[in-house]
Length: 285
Image (tube, rainbow, N blue to C red):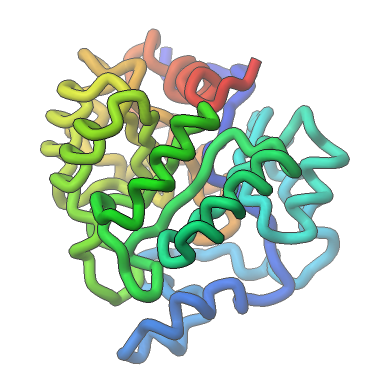
């Protein structure tokens, strides 16, 4: 049958085209090569970044228009900017909030998590361990209060795992670091982002091992989804693989959904991948 129509897709990584690319300055501060000259610091990895949408019109309307075009019913968005907060206030049926964590801020960071949860009703938190300055490993002591607070609040953490796109060190995001975290926090719901490459076979093994470990497809055009992930979804992992896009950071929804039609998921996998798994993890009724 292939990808079904009118399924009410939940996109667990979507955003809004900003006025410019200043939002990536925190990455540029850590880079030491000419990739600092890119408007989008990982532009070398992507073709046809939808830059034409930046600085044009109403960013909220642009994202809603694209969501409507391609059947995205709900989007998971960060709560750090005015546009996101307007989206959550004016379109609570279309957007779900994700909070930000910073392990280098100690208890101030934990108190910030609580504020985001109480003020914006966030359903998850997002982490970028290679992107912190200084960097912090996924299983570092600084992360443990964050994981404990996620468990206490009953929300998952979405975390970049695998070789990072920006040209800084990858050690904080080695896939094997997940094993200790999942052992120490069996109640923690942990969703990987950005592919886990080149350790996709290992993350499949870890998902088999740990019930609360999930994988999302963020930052990958569907034609590049790792075969190990497709095979796992089609066998024992239908409940573990979650759709995530990358609009408007590196991919257009048109590119994603055009490619998506050719992904070899079994018929029974599609609704779980595009909608049901995300709704379960985010507790979206």
